[in-house]
Length: 314
Ligand SMILES: [Zn+2]
Image (cartoon, rainbow, N blue to C red):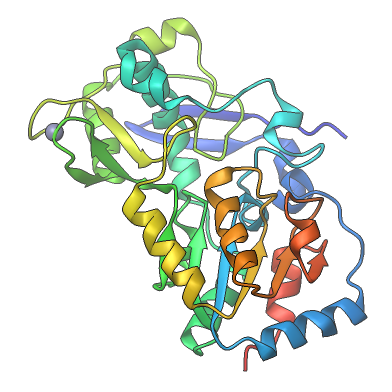
């Protein structure tokens, strides 16, 4: 099966429209979610016991929880971006150092934004939000930057790597909503048009050099500094205050559940090590192997949106 898909963008009365190509009509699940074995009733029971016994549950989520919402991850076998394309994520140092790299990044991000920002939570996000409402979930830590937990209503939440829905000035540190920047892009680039192919987890798309070079990028409206999405790019480090905060929450928890992460990124993996030092029971729900399978008392290779809503959080 061909895994790539195309996005064609056209201007219509100054607004951006996205049309998914026919391959996408099969649905997100088949496109971005790795295949998994059918649910094993015994394992579901075991997982239910794990959740029932937990009184202060900390949940850590990764890209695997959002694939069922149509956002591809980077690492999944066959369907992840590393497997489907030769693209690699932007490096923090390159972005900060180079105005042309920022221009290319923002041009692609501008084209991808209407599609990226329109993704909606899936049953896994809703289940975790429900667990919080019922007092089951002590704290939620996500490695995702897609705002889907917030859209589902989660509040006891730390976005470890920031959020694409916010923009940060690299000089004065002012935070502004990403949607406001989209309006500024549209004003500055009224006739700019592009055809783009493929959407990455951070909302990135492909463009030609010519298209990139004619794209106008606004700067901070307060100080004129360069703008960056309020996310931790590869090669950057998570804010130490955020790391301390999450370490505290892990230490206060009585069990840890990983949802949709292969734990390859150290900033998430180190909290698993903290949980292990504290001898917390660890359960992992992820299709495919993770860096911490050997530390988990329970490992489930199921779709997050299929399994989590089956669990009674009382
Ligand atoms: Zn500024």
